[in-house]
Image (tube, rainbow, N blue to C red):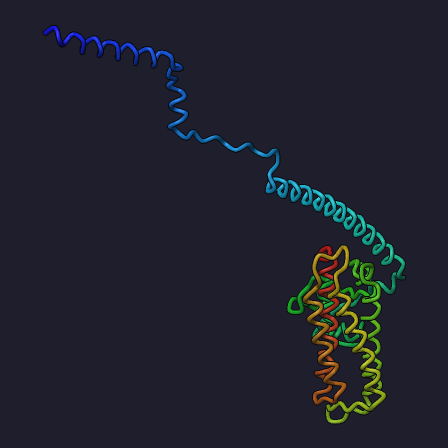
Length: 280
């Protein structure tokens, strides 16, 4: 039994030695352990303004600048339109009263076409009378008084000739040239067939070129004009095609000649309505 004591002493000494070694180390920190064992994510620092944010800011500034420019342009267009309207009214007043309108009492069997033939020398301008008097042909009765406006005054009063002075002049001039062509050709028409000569073709081609210029001017962009008058442009195109047909020689002379005036009349009516609506 006594021999076992030295072994116990040795074990006790070893334990004391280990305890002293551990106590000499730095104290154990549980937080350090957690930091070592667990990967804690750390958010990356945010840039003050990212590239996308910078683009959005630039787009906002550009949009604001565009809006300011659009507002200025709209205000300028509105002011110019008002000025044109005032000028148009002044232009209408400058025309002599007898050249503005003439009055015609409808007789029994009368029609807008007959009044058109009397006032405008061609029956095809009856829609001008319908527009100005606000009456449909089938509602016309004997005793009605129809006012026939001059074409020049009608275009000026609607502000069309203020926005498009050259188009208004060329349209009326083309009409006159074509009517002169018709009057000159009247004696040569036989069997309701048109056979124009070389000089006649030159004259009608002049009228065609004027109408073509009118179409191009109406189709072009212009400040103060929101959209072109498509209906008027189509009527002018139809007038051109019919005039080209007459230039090459045509049967049914009376019908084709009247069609030209129908289309020119329609073009004027649509132009006036478009102008009255603010060139929209």
